[in-house]
Image (cartoon, rainbow, N blue to C red; front, top):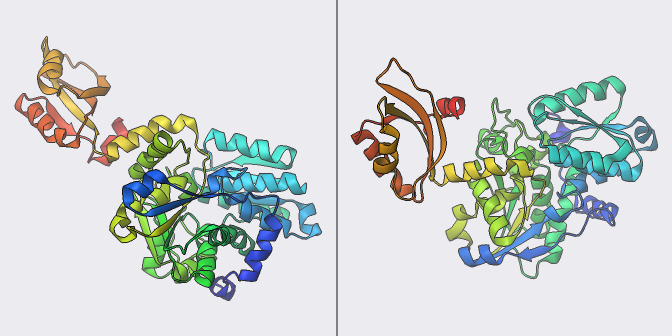
Length: 421
């Protein structure tokens, strides 16, 4: 690791310069009280609404700050970037605004909505290349093209100008807050926002505790801080696509390990429940990464009571086609959705017996896949059952076993679950 990567910290002067660069480009997003979360937690919960940016995430800040800093020679060559979606939109917007050609590499599974947004913001100035399954795959492909053609690479997080641009979020919070902030919860993917924001607070509000939040399935910063060195994860859960990277930035790690008060993770299912709650109760649409900070508040319920707390709502680029998956994950997390292999006796009336004698009055079958085996005494079916209360699960299983219907419980067998469902 080079000295540059281990000794760089953004200066307040550079962050203020970035704020000037972003005037008229990035919105001054509001810092709004959340009545529902404040009441629930007995604290003053404030939301920094970066989901209200024109590109619907804070990523416009770093992208525009970086690209606008390029020399005329570098601008003429064009730029290259890799992104899971939000950085791509910021880069596309900056390319069109500054009239610079950009090639944007994105993972193939990127939600269609994000791809369409990149096309809209970039217009004729942005070319999209879909490749690989993860951000890291897209990153490798983008670096090959960048090196081959001598173009400037606009990194989504491990870059000084990117960090300084994202740091303006912290500058705004301090200027907007009527009272001293006790806690700031910030989502962490590659670490661009967390490293910039935590530095600003360390300089201007050192008593504020800045907590980084990662998805449980992609704890790259948590693992790196625990190991005391930047660590590449061999496998990650990609659901929280805006915060799922196998390796955080070297600069970002060096800053975060010094400036973050703590790193924590939150289950993807909890994130899904938060997405649904924000939509149903507050009419706020967020993407999975945008729900991370609110999802983790329950873990700090006792600690933050009576405190002034800011949660960064980082983005709202959520694809509506993911709604069914989000609901499913939320139900699984809450213990209300369960999958079984049920062994139905090969006789008339077996299904009716299952419905009348085994299912509870409020239980609902939501998935059923059955193939009759004429040469066997019973035929297996994969059945998904939604219950009203997680306490209903044990009695349900007991009734299945008593009448010899029970085969396998699939929720706690992830490999079999993924194969069958």
